[in-house]
Amino acid sequence: MDELSLGVPEPILERLPPEDETVAADMREAIAGWEQRLNDVIDEADDDREAATQILEAIDRFEERYQTYDELVPELRAWGQSPIYALAWRTLYADVIAQLYDHDDLGEHLERERNARLVQDGIRLRDL
View 1: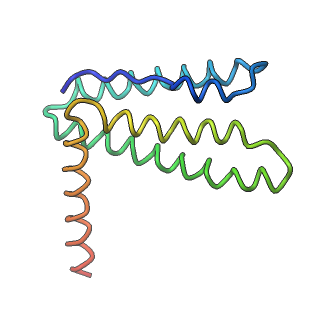
View 2 (view 1 turned 180 degrees about the vertical axis):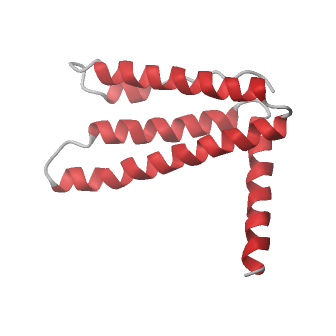
């Protein structure tokens, strides 16, 4: 499997307040860290399926974080606070997931692994 290359989309950065550069720097740093860890997973995996399994676990965590930020937006609005940072991080998580699925043949491996999990979960549920 080829090495991953992730990035922060410019539209996300453009929506951030211009006077606050720390969030953009934090996002770039986070992306660089995720990219390094995921590439380490690919390098250390015995095969593409093992790499896809571990990357899918990372995607699951990204989806959980997406949900957390998504649930935070209405709360911030209810308290009269700007949700711009929560929206930016939520969008970043969604974009990273999309970048992973769009990477070469990784998307196919991820779909196969996700389907295998569904079958295993279905078998376990049927046995209850």
